[in-house]
Every structure is written in C-alpha cells, then in structure tokens.
Length: 337
Image (cartoon, rainbow, N blue to C red; front, side, top):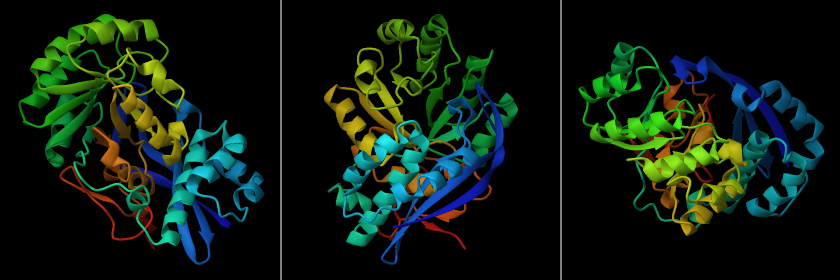
C-alpha cells in the first residue's frame, strides 16, 4: 500500500460558535491509501478541545509510514486491530486510517461499504442541520437560510430558553438541543420541562463529561431523553452510560473509526440505549463514511460538510435531511480536482 497525505483548511460559511468558543476555519488532513489502482480516503480534523493538530497528524503519519503501508490481505477489522497498538494515543489518526483502509478494501471488493456489512437501506434516519450559537436574530436567519426538518441547536448561554422560544415561532421542525457541557444539573432539569413544551426531541451532553453523579440525577429527573457525547468517547465508555443516559452519540474521530463505532452501536443496542452517530466539522470524506452506519441508528448528525464554504470532496449528500448515497463503491467519496 502507498500512503498519500493532503492537508486543507476548511473555511466555514458562518463563524461557528458552541459553548466552548468560536471557529471560522478547520484544518483537516486527508489520508489516502492506494493499492492495485484503487484508492481509499479517510479524514481527521484539528480540534483544540481534544488537543489535536494537523501538524502533529502529519508528523506521526510520516514517522509510522512503514507500519501503515505494510502489504496486507487483512480485513478492515483485522487492520484496525493491527494498527491500534501503534495509534492508541491518537484516535483521530486511527479513525482516518480506518476510514481509508475500509474504503479501499470495499472498493477492491467492488461493493459499497453498507453492502459489505450486509445492511439494507431501510428506515434510514434523517440528518439534522446544526445552528451554532449567535444572536437570536442571526440564529433565526441561519435557520431560514437552510429550511430543514430537524435542527440541532447549540446552547450554553444565559438566554437559552429565550433562543428556543423565538426559533420555535419560525418553524415546525424537530429541535434537538446540544449544550456541549454548558449546563448544571438544576439548569438541565429545569430547562427540560420548558424545552419539552417547545417540541424538543432530546438534550445532548448538558453536563461536564466527568460529572457521572450529576448525570444520574438528570437521567432520573429530566423530562426529555439525555444523549451522551463527550461522556462517551471510546468503546469502554458505552457500558458506563447505561442508567446515566438514554442514548449515546458516537463520533468516529473520538472512538478511532468505523470499526469500533460499529461495535459501540451494537453494544449500546444490547443495553437498551438509543444510538446516534455525529460528525465533527469535516468534509465529505468523513461524512460519507458516517452514512454507511445509518441503517443501525436511531439518529444521525452528519451535516458537517454543509457548513463549509469549500468542501474538497464529493460523495454522500444530504437533501432536506435525507441521505443520498453515492453510486461509487466503498464509502462513495472522491476528491474534487
């Protein structure tokens, strides 16, 4: 196999604000694995909260090139197990390599990834569209700019209920709330009462990720389902979320790729937890990979590429929340010229 590394700066259409801060661009690294005339693609993005940088990604990939490029007949699952000891301290990079190898492997097989997994495209959930924190006026304008059946609304301000109350006046769409660790226990329970009246479906990660005692109180007293995000990063976190959350939101970059994400979904289902896969702000490379997991999911958040001015790739697309799969094999992604 041959490894090719490309770096990009993904420009956002609007400044994107959550409870932790604002970003206008996202540095991204695209990993390409080539073999026998086929290419597979994977992605990792820079994230200050998780202390990841594209510069460090590139350095580590170059250092470990021989490990990555080993000629192999392994399945994606076997290749992930092979890579894990070498990349266990960098889940974002492990994700990019897992996506790329899985894409390559299924293209060589002449199948789409969901076909390799024996999934049928039935009961696929619609993706939400995210509205970042802004002035209420601007949040209304962003919503009107992209009419959508489901919105994820980022909160964690002093006037959260005022925001949702005003947004509700302008649409009948389903609302999902993501507080990104911005609330207290009492705020969450109190807000859940009012948000339920405003047609909110669930609340995502209201508390700090380590506040398991608080999560239990919220779980027992919230008027709305609570979905774990920052509290559920890797496979070992799934069981901990049982009886503390009603569901989990898996991010491929946080857990190390498609291979562990698929196992996490199965584990969560066995525990009676609702399942969701979310995206970072990323290009169609990462988004196209997520799409193939949707037959397993209750919810999906894969709007990352829609928030970009400059998507360097094409693949799976969204149309009014509906997922349109690519005609290409693998994850269906390709880089634009």
